[in-house]
Image (cartoon, rainbow, N blue to C red):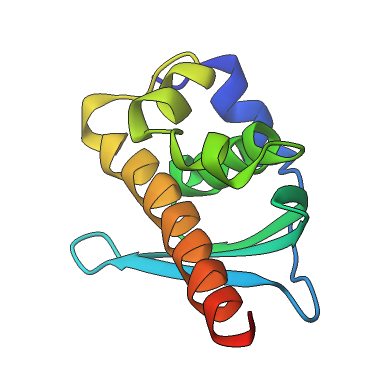
Amino acid sequence: MYSDKVLDHFTNPRNVGEIPDAKGIGEVGNAKCGDIMRIYLDIENDLIKDVKFKTFGCGAAVATSSMLTEMVKGKTVEEALKISNNAVAEALDGLPPLKMHCSNLAADALHAAIKNYQERDHQTG
């Protein structure tokens, strides 16, 4: 079953939405289960000032997206890159084994958004 934290983040997700003019956007999906996550980052001076997400998927996918946004806000890009799928699952007090792929998507979407930011930054810098 799901932990209380998973249920809380699913029923009351934090940081849902989009960031206009986001500095980095990452989208990942899992064809096997149909989950799609998009993460938006607002980064200033290498610090994640704001983060939002839009997720189409199961309760665990929504919960991991929500928890991830809580974990990265206020961190540096370097610190955020160290967040792993296991760290997201641990922050939610665990996920059922069949839902671990959802935490993989959350970390992957974050890393894709940071990569997008870094690529954009190098183009303009």
